[in-house]
Image (tube, rainbow, N blue to C red; front, side, top):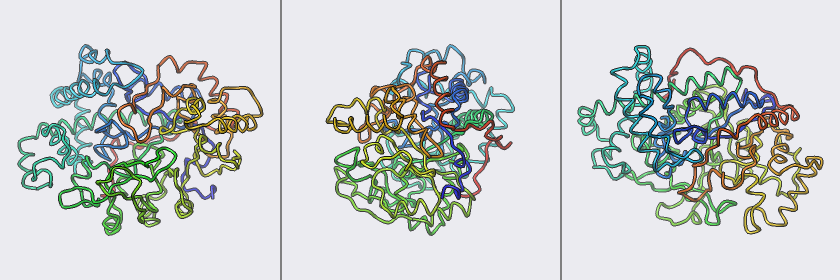
Length: 530
């Protein structure tokens, strides 16, 4: 099957790293798509790692989760590079120094968001007055391209949300809640400047992102994005196009998404996202979904679809349930949606996240559609029949993901945790056998194991390359409040680390591209589907 993969980026053996953009180093409270991101691409190039995987880059809402975005198309304004705005004369150096007091080893969202929002809004206000002519021309192009497709709806949503104390749209006055045309026209007439500023902020994000894409392409580093299968109820998409979802006449979900009890949670995971009205999507030939895939593949070379199994069948829970224990599996769109993608877009560079409870039907769907899957060694090494050479080529092999503890933290867990004493003994034996008994720490052994696999792409979180423990965990599923905060220190990415990773990549014979290919000349490619 691997030889028939339509995904052109999964034809050779490559190694990569997973690091979310918010986790980049820097002095302004959060990772940004500026100098630190460009420097990280240089570091990956020196490490001979050809793939940078990151989490969804949309604007986040409650809980700061990148998987609960306010829009499936917009960019997260918290990632905009402030130093770049200074260079564009939209902010001054003294103005951005106010963020220097924020911590550098974690994202303090409570302090960061109001302070950085004020700076971004200040830059947007100055844009129309003082931005360079060529930048204004690019903005006009950006707005012409995206206004009708998603940008104007998103701007309306954000301004309305701001005017209603950031409450979710279900709690807005009826005319706004129900997307009434007359009410919205009146609102637009008196909110033109505020709407324009939201659009400018989005332009600034994508303008900076496009430069990062071009640099990664020139350095031979593939950008590997991530797309949640579900959209948040509190999002521009759900507000403007509730027909996409199984909701009642007031917009409240009839059923919500989640998964039954599993490795991560005894009660399952109650995500709360509204589930799709797949009959509606089929009737419109999956046009909204196709536009979403196209948009994702315009900002990344390769895209992982989170919770792929939901396309075969999805777990639906009553909205008033306290846990995900009581739900039912309902049929998803199956092959039809992927046929629609390829009919509209041709070959698609997608990876299926096929973890958790995967049935033969789900696996068969993935294989029929020639989509690479995922293998996570923290799970695989605990299997009695584990053999590293049994991992197939058509997958991405991970030491762990953003939802796992770090490898060091997982390995050191107490008996009641992820690895009990028997499992620890078993892991030690398997790792020792797989690595020919070479003495090394567990994180290096697991990375070496992943990179020695037959998988075309092998990836480890940066925390594992650094050998960090549970204090560096990115997310604990089913919890809120302490997630998505970890950041790497700049001095951690030193020459010793770079050299050791480069040797490991060389040992595993994983290639890097000298050049991933130039981007087209269109700075803001438009969607061809709607």
